[in-house]
Amino acid sequence: MSTFQRSYPPAEPPAGLAHWLYFCGDDLLLPQPDATPLWPGISEESHLAAASHRVYLGLLDGAPLLAAHVATDDVPAGWVRLGLRQAFARSDATLTALTSLAIQLLRWHATMRWCPSCAQALVPVDGTWGRECPQCRQSWYPPVSPAVIVLIHDGERLLLTTKPGWGRRYSLVAGFVEPGETFEACVVREVLEEVGVVVDEVCYQSGQSWPFPHQIMVGFTARYVSGEIAIDASELAHAAWFHRDALPELPQPYTIARRLIDGWLAGAR
Ligand SMILES: [Zn+2]
Image 1 (cartoon, rainbow, N blue to C red):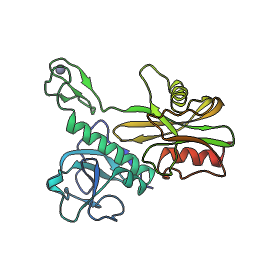
Image 2: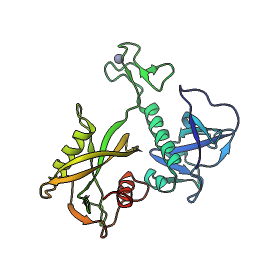
Image 3: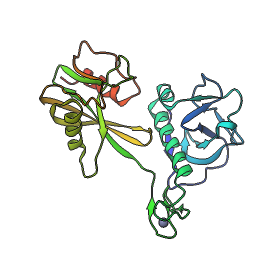
Image 4: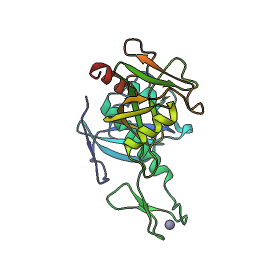
């Protein structure tokens, strides 16, 4: 497991060898398909002359970690693009979190350039990742959108759902928190909207940064109280109860959905 020390407020990296994370669009760039770890190792200068929007994130195992963007036309011959989900499947928790931080800061710097109110060019807010408008004085910071994800159980069974295109895979109910809403109220509302049942005993378990584009998934368990399954057909293809000993195909181990399910199987009744 790597160790990471965030650089904040934003600063210039110390001189010397650095780790580099390159992205093309939302994909990670690798020097070869099976590269491990998921960056090209450490070097003094960027491996890629065309890299832009350089961001210094902090110290990874004592060496600076930088992220940079590479345009599609500038990807060197032989390098490959790896989708973020595939990257997460090949990373530990520390590296997954860093990849999520890196892509979100790169997107922020690349896109948040003009005032949404008056269209003036924005300038950095000292000592932060923020941008402010010199004319109307409004400021903005990298967005994080909370979404709940909830494991619904009745003690022995899980209520799992699947969506069009998921094949045989089933997962948990999830949805965005509405303005003015608490996490607990969001869990109760989303479960009722998506599968038509009432839950209580809403308990926070853990969270996961989910950069698609900038969610924080907030993971809960909740106990079934009443109601027959009635799915929201605009979102789901099917929902059903599954006994803990006869679960269907589940999400991959790097997802919070899977971690909530594995945690419940290991401990809860
Ligand atoms: Zn403005």
